[in-house]
Image (cartoon, rainbow, N blue to C red):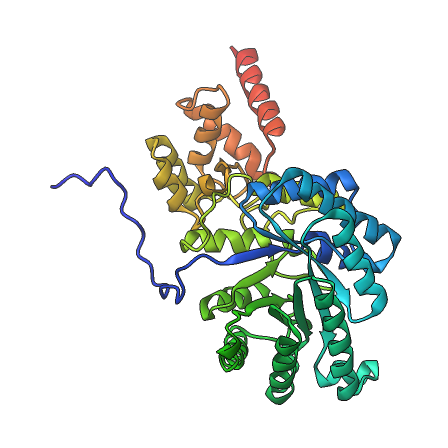
Length: 419
């Protein structure tokens, strides 16, 4: 019999190879979209600056610094973050959001002027028929507002993004006219928004191909117009849509820490980066991802759900018998690559995490033996192993380390007393 190769072979991959191999620009909108969630607390300026530093550590090169026209607090926050970027000299292309009003644009341009940062201004325009009807805006008025707002920002020397809100529910004829109009006015990027979380992955790709085709027709002026994608998670498809946008050629995809945002949130940045890294479309390491996600949760006063992919407390925990047995054998072999691959498609080492084997009512003896060996007890003590497992099986949940210490010591003490 031929002994197995010591080097674990990569698992078979049924997934289709990504259509796009080149890296993608991911813009972090945590400090903007995060404040739209009804469940968060407003992060302190210290926390916001800390998150900005961690964005740089993750290799993020684009970030939205908020909505300075939203009020005095929002203005001060955007100005503080802009100055922090100037002090740190981090290579992050910063932007802020503005509605197509003089007040909002003046605030954004004031932040740009005071900080000295070449802040990109993303001008939001509601474009779908349902939004226009709800807000009582006629199409000619929308075009006038776009012309006035973009012209004002361009004349001030700012780089402009034309943000087409609810584009995923907008007819192509309306989108085509607006795209050509915004580019003619001087916008350097077009942001396609799935504001209501309506799109599916195939719809995302159809929409972005249409946008790219419209921009291709304008190549006569020699300008390369960036295409951004921003989506919400109302149907639970924000991540899938973002990956579809990457595949079809979007230049920049927007995401926020833990997907925090309005209603059901937006694209979870930590899961997006992990998927891009796994498909060789994110060139930077993710060692700071855990710290970043935990810092964001603390800053916004929210809890990371235990089952949240990649950064949740359960992401690299195994408590069931068969899965834990395989993991324990891999861990005992000392082969980190094998341990990383055996139970999860996401290697724990990729994000600076460690595997954990729990003892629960559905565990087997291998879980208990591993726990004993890792915590200073004799894993070959079969009586102790069986007694400890039996004790845990009488409970209703996974045992904590403190509970296992207490149970183990009690069992050993009882054994001594019987001698």
